[in-house]
Image 1 (tube, rainbow, N blue to C red):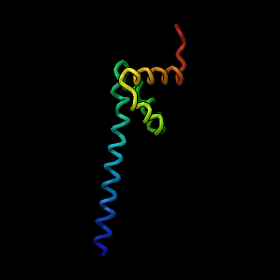
Image 2 (cartoon, helix red, strand yellow):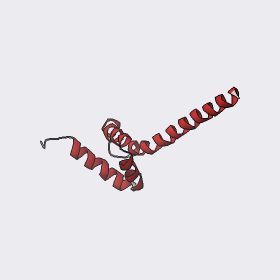
Image 3 (cartoon, rainbow, N blue to C red):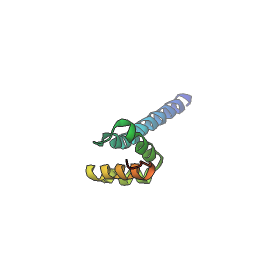
Image 4 (cartoon, rainbow, N blue to C red):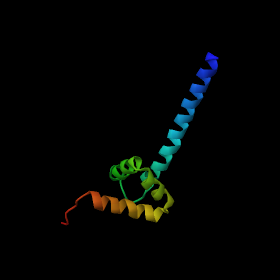
Length: 83
């Protein structure tokens, strides 16, 4: 009986790890967007990790719309004075 409980707990933990890895794969799409450096993409990445609904919407968009989303995110969250 004790061994069955241990096997069941281990199986659940392995499933949790697999789910976490699959979830992170969704977020890595933001890091693939061309035209931005890795440091710039870090903030939209962090934002999507914290907002599941936005992540779903982001993932439903094509590559061009994802790029526009990142540009809009950067424009809204960072003040860049015109020189």
